[in-house]
Image (cartoon, rainbow, N blue to C red; front, side, top):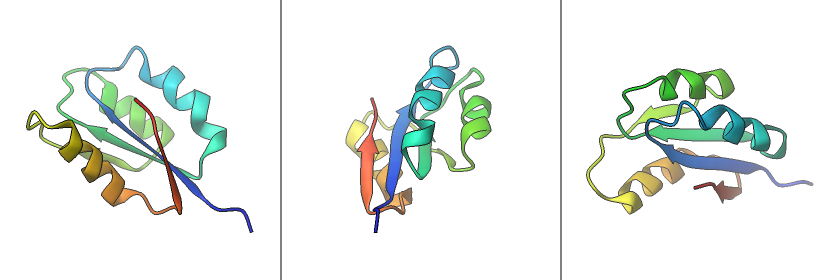
Length: 83
């Protein structure tokens, strides 16, 4: 039985790059988790076009905390982390 894969990433003000990024991995994973760390552009809205799993995380100057927050939302057996 194939195992499921979650794609997780942190984003902030990535409206220009995010569509290409998410589109490139869309067919490779079972779910996508996007954690927005305080964007002031259309990053959140763009992410919602690709996945319903878009979460806000107030930036606290700690990449590990934001990464762990994303991982807490992943439901698949494997996680692909994309920076």
